[in-house]
Amino acid sequence: MLTPADHVPGSQQGEWTYDSYAALPDDGKHYEIIDGVLYMVPAPNDFHQEIVALIISYLIPYVKHAGRGRVLGAPIDVVLEPGTVVQPDVLVLLEEKGTKRKPAQTTRPPDLAIEVASPGTTRYDRQKKYNAYARAGVKEYWIVDPTKHAVEVFLLEEKEYRSAGIFRGTQIIPSLIVPDFSIPVERFFA
Image (cartoon, rainbow, N blue to C red; front, top):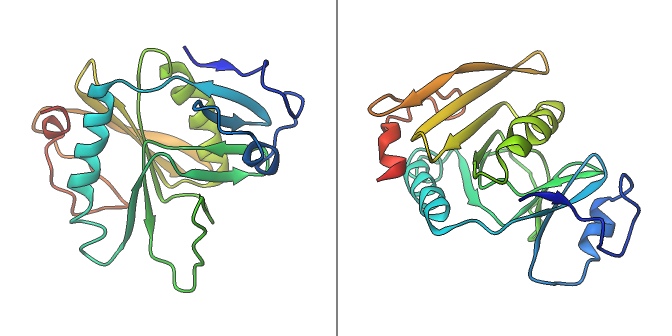
């Protein structure tokens, strides 16, 4: 279950920043910050990780090999705002000329963020991360539901997300970020 990490020594809840987060000792746990609140995120199960790996493998030919940008998987820190640091399961960064890379974090919000929901994170992904991604200008957000073998796609319009629909089976995701992506959703769950 995802919970605020009130027991972790450091900043007060509501005042966590990337700097205070980066100073945490490595205790083997996974943390994220939303609106200055530090959360401990449970480790994903093997099915979750297999879905993440499949999504990355299907996106790479359409993004990396096509010369459009990069496809990355967690863990990588994405600093959306000073008090909001997340680690999307998958992210796409379209190429920008002159963008400097930092080894431990992205230098800007992703163009596409993908979260594979689990029972302990579904509400967090649909509320806190959804709002944080919209505020940061993440143009496209996918929430993958392993239990329903479905993907809900959100597109940013005037700083708010609009659902483009829920896609299953042989349906193709209508991505604006990866417009020629033609992989049926069912392959994410094979």
